[in-house]
Length: 402
Image (cartoon, rainbow, N blue to C red; front, side, top):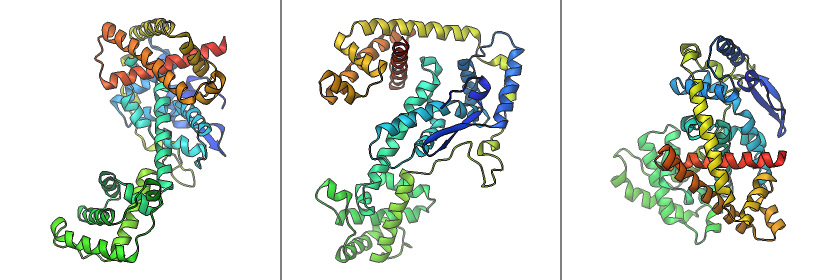
């Protein structure tokens, strides 16, 4: 993938993928015109930051004020590169996965809205770093969910399912409340009467035999007057089986929904893209209301202080732990490769890496609490973890360049 250089390219082009490879950058003309218009306005203004990070903060602030405007498209374009590299990295680390790179890319980019909602530039991490971590977690969770669903039969999936997840899946299909109640009761009776003794057998659970279906139907009809509306029909074995198979289909669709990119054509003719329907309110906010140079300098000072705190904390770690961090972040070795090189177990490498990052995170949290007066809520600590990960990655890149 050839990196984009100009501000115009960064915020108006999208990656085209084919056969699990990057092909080229595709320019969205509407986004390009919008970027050029804002660049022209910025050139006439004083005291504005026209760097990459400055424009990231601008579009993010604009998105916060008007989530439905073109800022969504600009930020989606901007995050194409980290999304691609995370998807590619995840695929290289997955063994036996059947999902192509393009699918992983779409799964990750679909989390854009959540990323923009949760991202806070005040915590020091760049949007790229924060998004990369979320992309990785999103892909991992989706692959794990889909793998779990794939290795289970419909009956094994229903046996494993929680009632909350089942209800959510049925609600997504638009079924009525009465229909959902009937399906849930049928599922409850199925779980009560059809089971397997151990987990592997549960995954490959077979279809209930006819005697069990008769028992499920009898239990359903006994419970029906007490749990369903008076108009709910009697349940036959054939009806209940049909309902449960439908439940399995709805659950699979819920666990692994189809993902759609903002720059996907709306029709086979390619007449426009989905993001073309987004109203453009960018002109409603003057650039003079954007990030001031004073705010940028304050962030730069804060980042320098964070670097000093973490550098000092790093020097206090055991030399063996420092070597471990260098191998992982500096030489980009996997945990398994490090284990072979140091002649230790892979789980030992994982444990020591986690311990080292916890130690550094503690130092950063203490400094943030004492200097910035930040309350150590779970959200704040989560953002600090992102800052730490970004700092370690940057340290690693500097070592490689040296």
